[in-house]
Image 1 (tube, rainbow, N blue to C red):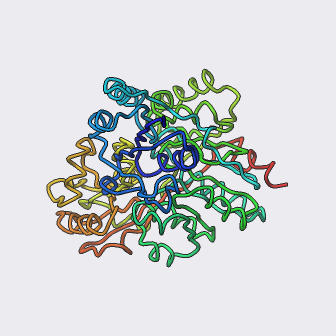
Image 2 (image 1 turned 90 degrees about the horizontal axis):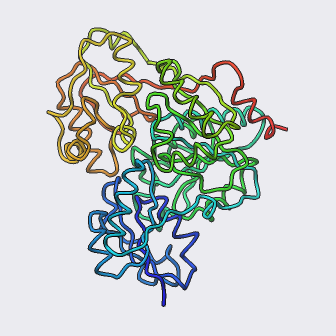
Image 3 (image 1 turned 45 degrees about the vertical axis):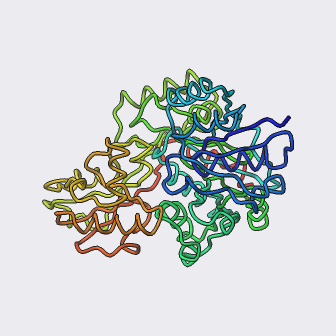
Length: 437
């Protein structure tokens, strides 16, 4: 008798767990995936071309709200939780739902799905979405590249389109972003690396992706998504902690796993965090992972033309996932608005249309920030209309990608960026010394 399995996911870790553990396991039958967090994933199928010969019809993907009915309808014996950036309480609520419906509930150890590489691997992960993982990854890549090493960044999956076409993706130029019809979320992660001359790989099948990256790189950098654990076995695990959300390093899954495993912990945002909050994070490091090397860092903001903000009514656009399941109440855009004396931060909710309005309904605690959501052409168009409908003087774009290239704005806009800035010693260069020789 095959074990009947359902995998709970969000179009990323779930597919990887399946590919590594179950795709060739004839003792298991994966009946379905469920999907959440990301729009337009449910009501699709994990295609047969990727699922392998044991699944000639592929595997259906359902909405997570169908979990209980799916367990009962298909006599599911085991539910595997396979997505990230959720509270420990949330994980166990889902576990209780699965157990009450009659299925076992399972979490997969990260070591069970970490693929070994022929090349050295440095991973950059976080305790929460929005901790500053992206600028940390950029700093690591820049340091290694400046030392003469050829690096490739492999990004945590964001396969929101044709999964077969996205099995292995290579991004070396900005034209590649258009060729793969990338979403805003993908562009935010890929574009900063590409603009620095660093090749990015991503997709669905990470064994095949790793093999391609190994052909080009002296050192592979794993760039994590949300607060997920690395897909590759890493020689150095760098984890970013966020003192704006002290204590979350011990209360969110699987961020706490990263926190406990880390060789290096970056305490980011010291320039904007309170002394007490930073000390909470430091105390938790001493308690949970005292062997970790701790690097203090700031993430200073850079504004194209700060004079544009002064005494203006501004609409602030921030990174989407950081505001939605990341739960952040502010970011670099708000900091710029306050620092450069905007007269008012305009609430986007009265002007929101379509799928942007739906995002505010799903995440009512976002508040007066506009999340840069763009998981498809319709959502991108709704974002454009929302911005253009807003009664404001200036738009502050505080996302890693310049939205002005993707949407047509009817009002002035100014871009805010941010980079990692180590404070004191040790530094990123110090922990990377073994890779530079």
